[in-house]
Image 1 (cartoon, helix red, strand yellow):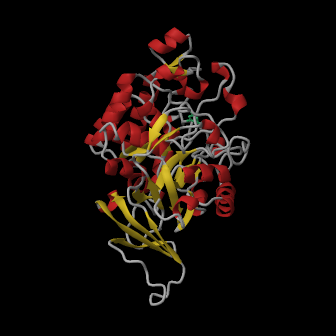
Image 2 (cartoon, helix red, strand yellow):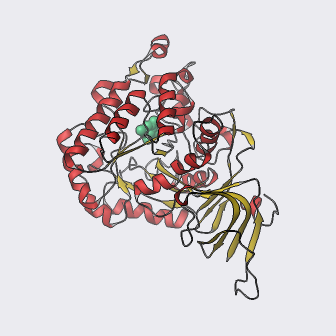
Image 3 (cartoon, helix red, strand yellow):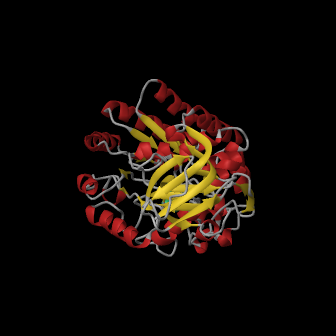
Length: 440
Ligand code: DOR
């Protein structure tokens, strides 16, 4: 089986490629990039195949989202592995890393095997499970990390239940170092946040909502960096949202600490003003912050202090969002809006080149997680995303593939959504637009 994509703008940051060309996929792998002739059905022994004209489109490695929440098992009414994978494919993602805050938590071998076997049956894209660091994510006792590594876990994280005990965190860092296992940290000093609901500042005062100071994020980032230096281990910081956090990570990188980080589209696209009107779809943890924070996040992305863009896709049911602000769940869906928000708010505005933006969604997360993919080199997995960087569309929450519709971007006009997504050489989204359609 072959698929030839003709005349697209091929951007592969891992290979330093940004040029108009063709891409040939044979039997699930990248076979050739450049000027490629259609395989001869008679002489090359390759009987079935398609040629698609993708001129005007951008062709990149399949996007990798290193931070999502699929809610299976335990909360299938919000999202399942199957529906989350469908939403991811529609958003241009070919690999996603689900966090362990399911019920029960993914904290042992059997749970990792459940995720992988369900994904093998029900998901068209690659699922890279993340295991919990402590049993039940209760921050007390180390989880069976060695066994989870043996069964295929990609990284570990205690997600939104960050380990407050520094001694335990140090031991976990030392232990994970033996496996060179990425530790993904949601940084939050829970004692300082108390029961805050949004960013602490002028807007929270006007709305009368209890605030979450940026210092709660920054204190924990500084602590985790100090512990990673002590343990000599590597550290990845999730969803960076504040100017102070960017500065702490900038300084740590300057002195050679092995630290990487991600931000999410909401932190470069929205401020805490989005909460005005008590909009629960803008309630997220860490919270949306100020315009100065948004500028610092953009600066951090442009400088390379922020390595990756992830979504923190956090589906919640309507009854968990259409309630009083203090009772609403934290989180927003993000898989289907991440690429267009990146194109519209970072590339169109000149913060990042298209190639640098793609690197933060492909090669960089692949290298942090040490997984295959994230490039278009010959012989690599044929995980490919095709998008139109110029076509405008309006986000319609009701039409999202995700089971949950909790997005603050409903009704916004954006550019650059995925046209087709290919995983292992199979078209997993946009088949009708690509195959047999002539020019895409
Ligand atoms: O807003 C959030 N929602 N932040 C998190 O860290 C967790 C997530 C969830 O699981 O809903």
